[in-house]
Image (cartoon, rainbow over all chains, first blue to last red; front, side, top):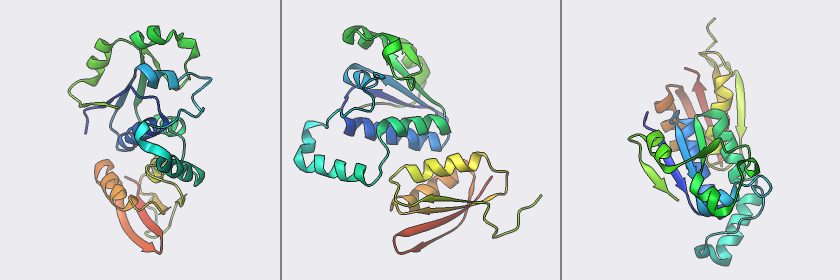
Length: 137
Length: 80
């Protein structure tokens, strides 16, 4: 279990970010390092002033999916941002913003939530990923 | 100092929390405890049964016992 889990987050909807946060927390609890690389719309969701906003759901969720997600949240499910904070608390979780996506979205590093550890290029991400699998969400 | 068998050092009440929070809360609780401490976890997440077995195997914290009372699963874990 020493190889890191490497997640590339592309989608910026709350359901996909929630799934990614849960995968991250599970790995962190097992002592497995996690590298998270934020691209495109996922990166946009990590802006400090929007991280706790409603980012919608993937189109396949539909109305029934929306209702189910709302019910789980109402029952006390932690948000994806909170789940990631907890994962960072118990394990080794490194969250990096993709520098190209920063340019694309016109985001300055100071605008990102403190949960993001830094900005890097894809080469640095691959080096951190080592021989661990890369999951694209 | 050996901790007596059956003396619960701390209880993690994870009832009502969804996956993976029972494990996350337990991992948080365990790290501040001495080796040999006994942790009681209460959880209603049905996935917690397999999750705690796997977490215990992987981290070396011993799953001493587990039981279920209605919707509530109870795990006793001995800190590595």
